[in-house]
Image 1 (cartoon, rainbow, N blue to C red):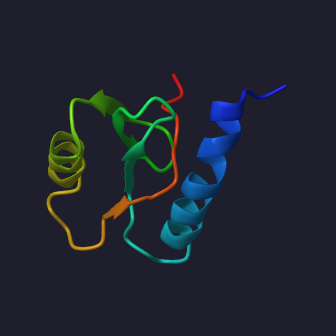
Image 2: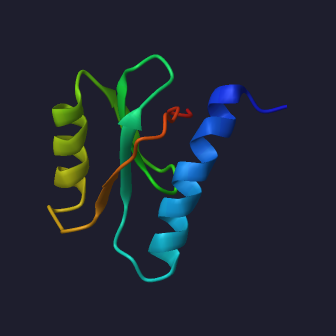
Image 3: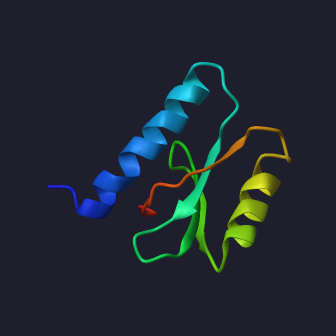
Length: 83
């Protein structure tokens, strides 16, 4: 049975993945986890990390996407970094 954190991550990542699969450029999702830490995660779960603040998470995601417009989505939903 999935944990509540695992359930919370699915809607935001599914939206980002659906947009990417439909030809969008979103590759990274940046949001806070249930404890309030900042997370950047690649939409297919291949990379990501836990960061000190929003600026650090965004900087990582932007660097990973070569600063392409619309490649990073900032979500209001809480997500969990799944290892």
